Image 1 (cartoon, rainbow, N blue to C red):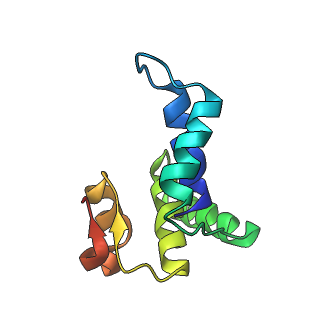
Image 2 (cartoon, rainbow, N blue to C red):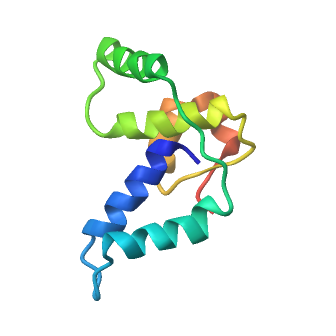
Amino acid sequence: MSCHGLAECFGVLTRSPYAPTIDPARAWQLLSHNLLSEFELVTLSAMEYQDAVRRFALNGWGGARIDDWLHIESARKSNCETIYTFNIRHFHQLAPDLGDRIKSS
Protein backbone atom coordinates (compact mmCIF):
# COMPACT_ATOMS: atom_id res chain seq x y z
CA MET A 1 0.00 0.00 0.00
CA SER A 2 1.33 3.42 -0.84
CA CYS A 3 2.04 5.77 2.05
CA HIS A 4 0.01 8.28 0.11
CA GLY A 5 -2.92 5.83 0.24
CA LEU A 6 -2.61 5.49 4.00
CA ALA A 7 -2.91 9.26 4.38
CA GLU A 8 -5.88 9.36 1.97
CA CYS A 9 -7.67 6.61 3.91
CA PHE A 10 -7.15 8.51 7.16
CA GLY A 11 -8.51 11.69 5.57
CA VAL A 12 -11.60 9.96 4.21
CA LEU A 13 -12.35 8.17 7.47
CA THR A 14 -12.09 11.33 9.53
CA ARG A 15 -14.05 13.67 7.25
CA SER A 16 -16.82 11.48 5.81
CA PRO A 17 -20.36 12.07 7.02
CA TYR A 18 -20.69 8.78 8.86
CA ALA A 19 -23.10 8.49 11.75
CA PRO A 20 -21.55 8.14 14.20
CA THR A 21 -18.48 10.00 13.03
CA ILE A 22 -15.05 8.40 13.17
CA ASP A 23 -12.64 10.35 15.33
CA PRO A 24 -8.92 10.41 14.44
CA ALA A 25 -7.91 7.95 17.19
CA ARG A 26 -10.53 5.43 16.02
CA ALA A 27 -9.47 5.95 12.38
CA TRP A 28 -5.88 5.13 13.35
CA GLN A 29 -7.06 2.04 15.19
CA LEU A 30 -9.04 0.86 12.14
CA LEU A 31 -6.15 1.52 9.76
CA SER A 32 -3.50 -0.11 11.91
CA HIS A 33 -5.64 -3.18 12.58
CA ASN A 34 -7.14 -3.67 9.10
CA LEU A 35 -4.53 -2.31 6.69
CA LEU A 36 -1.13 -1.99 8.28
CA SER A 37 -1.35 -5.51 9.67
CA GLU A 38 -1.95 -6.85 6.15
CA PHE A 39 -0.02 -4.59 3.76
CA GLU A 40 3.54 -3.37 3.43
CA LEU A 41 3.85 0.40 3.06
CA VAL A 42 5.67 1.67 -0.04
CA THR A 43 7.30 5.09 0.03
CA LEU A 44 8.06 7.21 -3.00
CA SER A 45 11.16 9.37 -2.85
CA ALA A 46 11.17 13.14 -3.15
CA MET A 47 12.50 12.76 -6.70
CA GLU A 48 9.68 10.35 -7.60
CA TYR A 49 7.12 12.90 -6.37
CA GLN A 50 8.89 15.62 -8.36
CA ASP A 51 8.91 13.42 -11.48
CA ALA A 52 5.17 12.76 -11.06
CA VAL A 53 4.33 16.46 -10.87
CA ARG A 54 6.65 17.21 -13.82
CA ARG A 55 5.00 14.47 -15.91
CA PHE A 56 1.54 15.87 -15.16
CA ALA A 57 2.62 19.43 -15.95
CA LEU A 58 4.26 18.46 -19.26
CA ASN A 59 1.20 16.48 -20.33
CA GLY A 60 -1.21 19.26 -19.36
CA TRP A 61 -2.90 17.02 -16.79
CA GLY A 62 -4.27 18.56 -13.64
CA GLY A 63 -6.44 17.72 -10.70
CA ALA A 64 -6.68 14.82 -8.35
CA ARG A 65 -5.66 12.19 -10.91
CA ILE A 66 -2.14 12.77 -9.70
CA ASP A 67 -3.21 10.87 -6.57
CA ASP A 68 -4.01 7.88 -8.80
CA TRP A 69 -0.59 8.24 -10.42
CA LEU A 70 1.15 8.15 -7.03
CA HIS A 71 -0.65 4.89 -6.21
CA ILE A 72 0.32 3.47 -9.61
CA GLU A 73 3.96 4.44 -9.16
CA SER A 74 4.00 2.87 -5.70
CA ALA A 75 2.56 -0.32 -7.19
CA ARG A 76 5.22 -0.29 -9.92
CA LYS A 77 7.97 0.30 -7.38
CA SER A 78 6.92 -2.69 -5.30
CA ASN A 79 6.09 -4.83 -8.36
CA CYS A 80 2.53 -5.50 -7.18
CA GLU A 81 0.79 -8.44 -8.78
CA THR A 82 -2.64 -6.81 -8.33
CA ILE A 83 -3.62 -3.16 -8.03
CA TYR A 84 -7.01 -2.62 -6.41
CA THR A 85 -8.97 0.56 -7.02
CA PHE A 86 -12.52 1.84 -7.30
CA ASN A 87 -11.30 4.14 -10.09
CA ILE A 88 -10.46 1.57 -12.76
CA ARG A 89 -11.02 3.89 -15.72
CA HIS A 90 -8.46 6.46 -14.56
CA PHE A 91 -5.94 3.80 -13.59
CA HIS A 92 -6.24 2.19 -17.05
CA GLN A 93 -5.85 5.58 -18.73
CA LEU A 94 -2.74 6.42 -16.71
CA ALA A 95 -1.13 2.96 -16.84
CA PRO A 96 -2.38 0.95 -19.82
CA ASP A 97 0.68 -1.28 -19.49
CA LEU A 98 -0.64 -2.49 -16.11
CA GLY A 99 -4.17 -3.16 -17.36
CA ASP A 100 -4.19 -6.85 -16.51
CA ARG A 101 -3.16 -6.09 -12.91
CA ILE A 102 -5.77 -3.38 -12.21
CA LYS A 103 -8.89 -4.71 -10.50
CA SER A 104 -11.81 -3.44 -8.43
CA SER A 105 -12.18 -6.49 -6.19
